[in-house]
Length: 318
Image 1 (cartoon, rainbow, N blue to C red):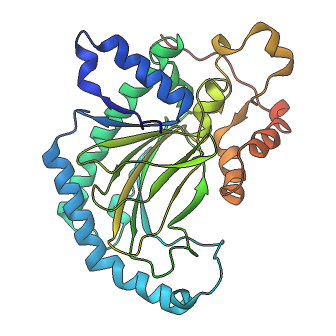
Image 2: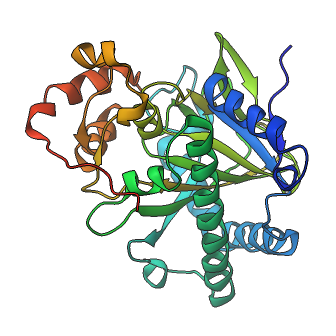
């Protein structure tokens, strides 16, 4: 059985840089996922994020989730549920403007800690994008610039808890999907598992590891890399025991960013029959909202239909 790629980011600073970059490249090409250790975010900060997130769920979210389950009669279902997920979630927006002051029930300590965490994740996302640029032969900064719209890029966090489920065979924690955006950074529970990705027709567990950050690639990176790197189907299985914490941060293009394959990655003979479209990110997100749990390929085809209306100049990397 293949081993899920775990990458020690500290090895980029020494003699092992080249093989580490090769592992990152292989993970992006063949997995769409990898897990980072020694990524530069302090363990104390990660411990605080986990403690405060779990406290917030118990105080503010757990009872609401139980009431929702009761109102829908989910504990007594007899057949598979395919139109909802067994998860309790809320969202924080960081860029272009934060909404944290608008979120009710967030204690000041939690708000402050999540703001610090978001800044660390933003730096890590930008570092990773430049590593991808290096592996792809793109100029440093290309991917970040490609994500920037007139107001910069968008960056936000989905905070989820997956409580114990009495019917995990009938209800998914989160149904299978690819992520619409750019690069996703996940801080997940190190004790309760459930995240899986689809590789070569098999569902493979993403291993829970203490203080790691799981990375996966979204649809926009597949388009910009002209399919050299892929977004991958993944899902969360509900569990009968334990509540799984998931903090997924999405480093995405700005709403009016124009997304298309990097010219350097399009072969000359491909230009007449380009596989990936050119589109405005916001238009893709409108389409994705209704088709999230369906295959990505029809979404790309649908965007080709509106491609003729999109214009863009070259991406400045100076």
